[in-house]
Image (tube, rainbow, N blue to C red; front, side):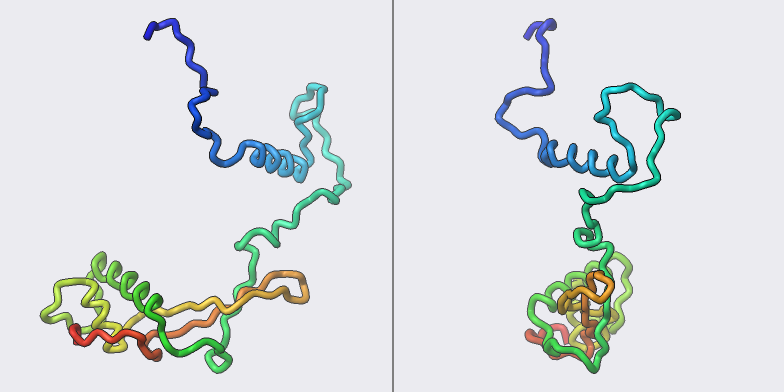
Length: 174
């Protein structure tokens, strides 16, 4: 390779360098600028101090961000007497619960039960679950619907694993 070879950033090596789709990003930037009242596509040059924004906002092309973003949802916790899901903890919930709790025990050494004879955080978390002394809560997503104001309400049920039946029992940790 000689030192006078020119390298281009737009190399045609068969790989897509823009994994996020540059066209979509440009459209989003244009939409955001339109929402702010800034128009960069004008051919006349003007400084920032000369730019005047109209007080009247024309919004037929605007996007309802509330319908897109999860951050604008209203979270509703279903009361225990109105729960609809089963009181059985699935093997998937059990596995996730044990792995989260084992990570916490490994990092902070805060087991809620006697751990005599156990040195593995996973076994400690299993013992905690089987002895019904777990401090975690299982959150089950039940559904979503729009309320009268047009906001999306997400419904969740909170279950204590200490009051649930288990799909898998671990007798070796008791």
